[in-house]
Length: 301
Ligand code: R2B
Ligand code: URA
View 1 (cartoon, rainbow, N blue to C red):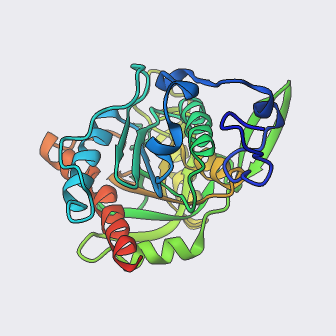
View 2: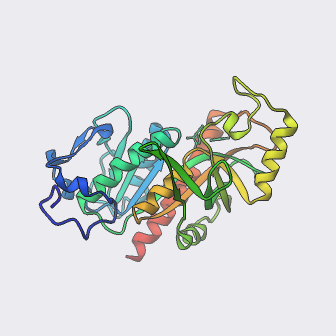
């Protein structure tokens, strides 16, 4: 039996953990939600699209944007409010869309993925798709291009995400939904879009071959050789969460897509020198693309 008093063995879409069945209640610590304190099915049971990005303010902007885009479908029109009671992550619910930030890097992403997946499990949500709408450094692309990820690879170019569990390295595969990639590409319209592999690293500086970190023990030539090698292997952009995001969505049996805008061409430099306006415009592009997809999907149902 789960927290809702039902047998959850068949509802194992989001979670796979028998220990959850023994718990009387569950504190989702990093969003400050105790599951038993609210009618979780009523509040979150109708979620169909989970959209995640790094920063709290970008997710707030996205929530306002999607609210406006979906105004014909939504009953309420007040500004979306943050349902998270913790200052670690924000969580907005706009009709069937759940917008959540994941912070920077794999550890931060994993914590909020566990709690979001459990939330959806307790809410008995169905047919949910996950999207990471983020930023990245591009390889040979015009800055501002949205890359739809075909394969999320780790920093060794392998399609796996690694996690140390009970003192052992465990590797999880990182497949993504090909059909969803195609459907997203069909929605791209005037948004500059490319399709290719994404490399997920554990650092923004040395982990991505930058020369401008506090430490660097390699040359410009070493860096360019590495970037060219991964580009030749099919990598179009580099960021910090895609492999773990894909692996966790795969473990949860949910369809997932990664769409990251490129803020610069890493074959030309390391520093992000965009103006505030350019940055704001670019970082909303994956959000605009996903919003088009969500609208189209809702129109068809
Ligand atoms: C892209 O941008 C962030 C680093 O600046 C990180 O979260 C990522 O994946
Ligand atoms: N985010 C990254 O992880 N890398 C970049 O180069 C830009 C954004």
